[in-house]
Amino acid sequence: MRTDVVPWTDPAAVRLRGLQRTEIAERYGTPDSEPGTPPSADDIAVFVVAHDEDGTAVGCGGLRDLGDDSGEVKRMYVVPERRGSGAAAVVLAALEDWARERGWKRLRLETGDRQPDAVRFYTRSGYAAIPRFGAYADCASSLCFEKVL
Image: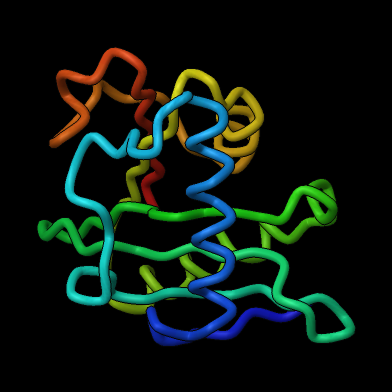
């Protein structure tokens, strides 16, 4: 499995983010469960797409610069048929390496209370629960995590 840094507008990235938003809408019963400003080309510092051995894009994730040497993991997603393949770990490792190379000290993220699979993944990846931050502070369904790099 390989990862590539791609532009926000890369067709595979657009497709994967669309699938992610569709899945989240189904889980939460609303087309827009994003408590804060949705990520965009204007505020995502890096976006990574994972490709399997035959070149198919199977996962993605990005980082938003939060300032103060920290970033926020955004739009992590792996297609359902490739979950458990290690794709999410490869994407997250690429994002963490990118952040370290730029001197960032921590990564934060938000996931929802209807995503126990994501909570397990992030906890296993060294992320610890923190109080809700930023736009998520008043969102009861938000679960926030942080990893010191």
